[in-house]
Amino acid sequence: MIYLELFLGFLRIGLFSFGGAYAAIPLIRETVLSYGWITEENLAYMIAVSESTPGPIMVNMATYIGSSQGGVFGAVIATAAVVAPAFIIVLLLTALFKSLAENRVFRAGLSGVKACVAGVILATGAYMAATNCFEGSTVFDADVTALVMTAALAALYFGWGKIFKKGMSPLVLIFIAAAAGVLVYGWK
Amino acid sequence: MKLLIELFLTFLKIGTFTFGGGYAMLSPIESICVDKKKWITHDEMTDVTVIAESTPGPVAINCATFVGMKQKGILGAFAATAGVVLPSFCIIALISLFFDRFLEIKWIESAFRGIKIAVGLLIIDAAVRMIKKMKKEPLPVVLLICSASAMMLINVFSLRLSVIVLMLGAAAVSLIVFFAKRRSGREEAG
Image 1 (cartoon, one colour):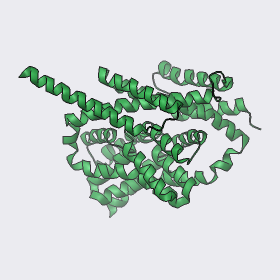
Image 2 (cartoon, one colour):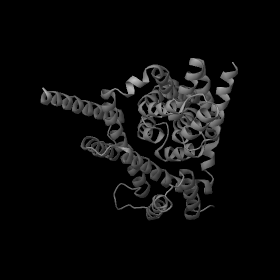
Image 3 (cartoon, helix red, strand yellow):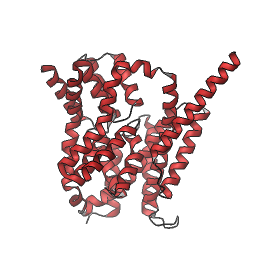
Image 4 (cartoon, chains in turn cyan, yellow):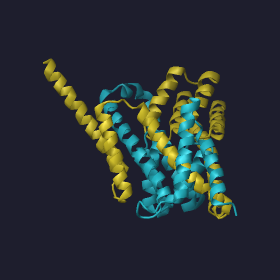
């Protein structure tokens, strides 16, 4: 039953994603790949599309996967499931939030979760960047074009922040990478 | 009723014109809801940011629900949340209809091969930013290194171990350390 799977899958994502969309990417990736809803490749594409269209990235991903798996109704289910935990928790917390935020036990637990999430995102990002460059099963099957592009884009993106003090917008990076992709991989 | 419609339309506008996800929405929400409409105060805005960071779910949803709730109870929360979700829902539902066919066009496929590389970098960047904000104490640093290594192993060997298990484990470890410290602190004092 695809609707139930979509609901449970995205409810799980909505419940365990602390710290915004990028923090949720490892969990989204794990969920959608294990259900076989989308390929690794298309997932990376959708992250870019979600980043380049307005709205919360997690909602965008839920809508896309819901729609591709179960049409409009699937999209509604997945989106509602990803939104519901945040909605309900905030409703409950508005009243008693201050006491919870100042609770030292809660803060101690949360700081552990945050450190873990940072590590998990780092590993996921590094893994995704590496699979772009090494498509084969061994380290020696390097895709040199992708390797050079990764290095160049990384230098541009991280160097920009150092030189101009203000980081480059993700949207600009995506645009430059798209243009570079067309130039390098051809347009016909 | 008028306030409900206003909440809905305001968040509809925020949802339509903010690119780049939840954190990018914080500043428009602040300028509209705090400065212009005076729906919430600056202090409450800071609270929302903390709530958004310490509760699960999309940051924008947390904010919209909070502001709506403050103004008009559960109905208000519903109107604001629906407003902020609706634009991206419609846009993405539309895109999903023709995305696969779109990718069959050569230059678009090439563009996305480039974009895929950018996405990897953006995720690394998000992690680096989180690490910079972290307290540089032994425990979080150890948890960070352990979880990054565990996640790398999970990815490389396609292990069936969920991120959620790692998160719960990290929470458990930091709680144990917290209580152990408190206890030894008490013993020293006593």
